[in-house]
Image (tube, rainbow, N blue to C red):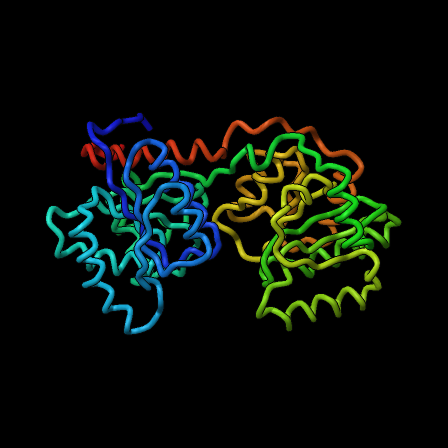
Length: 379
């Protein structure tokens, strides 16, 4: 994609349901910061959330509207958003979720001059009319080749390949530095909190508290390694979420059933993820459902930590390109333990990252914005 610079600054409005957490929300903030740093005006419309403070501290503006709430009352936000857009006169409206995209699409009908409409497909959404709104962008960003193939397979008559742009999510290599090691005081505090994890290779499975993340497979992996006389420990990082108490109780019951109380820990979400990665001998990505990307794969590899995961979806795509030794067939328990034993014995070297960096994602997105504003045809 050739970089095209607009003759003037741009005003870009991004639409998301809320700013609490999640991949789409993180990307929203990353692009907002890139716009501000490049001298453009950045506005985000959402229902609000804990990330608003960071957004505004980094120079963007926020407009509070519940455009992602699934209720009939959300339809009343169309007129409110239309008034906001008339006042802001944005060059681009960038929708990152389905309901905000519909609200934005209807709101723009009464705005002149009409802003350019850009969308991002962040996930493997259920095919159908509701999801098709994300294909109406002048340019449609997808976050992986897997997602591009999915969109073209399910909507062969709704979108041309020329309008699709693959812009993978990127990680901040300063936040996840290559070869990083936490200091001794952090390690002492960590193992005081989780004494059962000390004294053997640590496996880390990051992911929220849902069975789709494959936590049970991680627990069974430790049991299988133990049956082969291979001592290893496991932390289910971020699985202990509010509202998921019943699921966490299931995991604890499985841990007890397998006799692994002294080898497995479950933690809430933590701010020191990079430190946990850094002391891990192996990072796991065992999602049962294919993911559109797989940011944790790139984060861990950027720090020179081996990753093992199921070879499907965006995770399989990333592992095929960046770390083929970590690929395992989906739900193949025997191959999973064999590969884990191999990687714990000898993990192939990992070079410093040269792709999937935050700066790559930001540059590609701003270049796409410029092309849209300048009327450059998609190619």
